[in-house]
Image 1: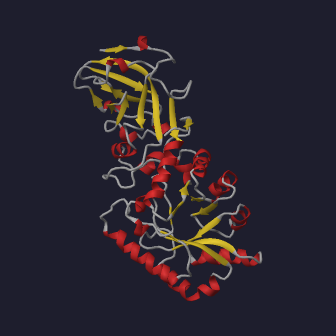
Image 2: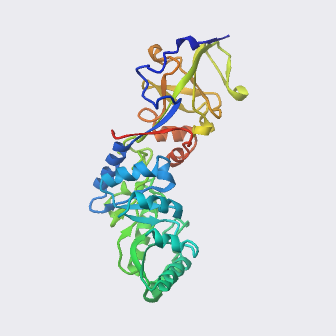
Image 3: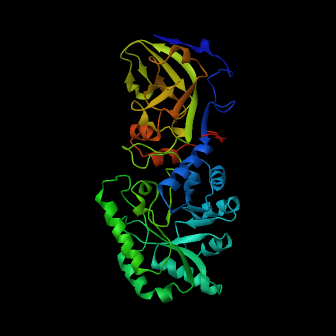
Length: 384
């Protein structure tokens, strides 16, 4: 038997509600926490500079408000992945350096130059394209060079590095190399032997190239020690509150708080099923809450019957399959005083960490953030 609790609705003035007015779901972004995390990165990086990584719309949290917050924290260097991201960012950070990780193609060179963006050159072919663009304009153009030290993704491979080392005086004649960088593959594992191997390969590469500031570490690398910091580090996940080394204590504060309202409460008897395909059956008389969040909002379908939400700081299991717009929670053990239609439920934040969410969804903390749907309204607060 199913008994609805619709009559317990407390209205929009429920004292526990702090989510977006007139919305059933909300992503609150704590800009103050992002600034604190940036300052933590500065402390951990020692004398190295700290850039801000704003690719993928600042990991889904909003490039414009995040960039303003980081500027206020004295960040003057940013990284994006795509040309379009750099073009959008330029008017927001007028005097800052912006590096574009994808590099340059012949057809993208004019836009990079007009927006004063610095490409990260990943191959001899990209170096030639950028050199040609400089020669055509009778000038010298800034660029970063990326060398591959083991990721085998982007960057100059060993054979290209050898060629460039022998021909740098001619190949780089029209290029002002402002940064030499690489990327760690296993920085999330502080005991992984690949970290030391890549560190040595990077040092060897620097010895082969003209002197320039160097950068090896993103978020995880910052936690490996100051020998990995070089001249500038590039935290992304850390600024947004994720743990770059899951399993170790997280020194960074939560930035993204994902909440939704309870739309309906009901009691079910033992043996009743929940959701599509009846993948969950109650093992006892239970109280269920249906909340206004689904996989269209970034609550991954794989988290059904595995993940948790929180009501008043008490973790409650997600039961049954996640639907496009809805999810069901077993709130039998939640405080009775917190159970009401309109009640706020936390799916990500102070009680449910990015890593909790990612583990339950068989995903990664990076993917959780960047998957948060555009349908969920963002609310920005200065507090941390």
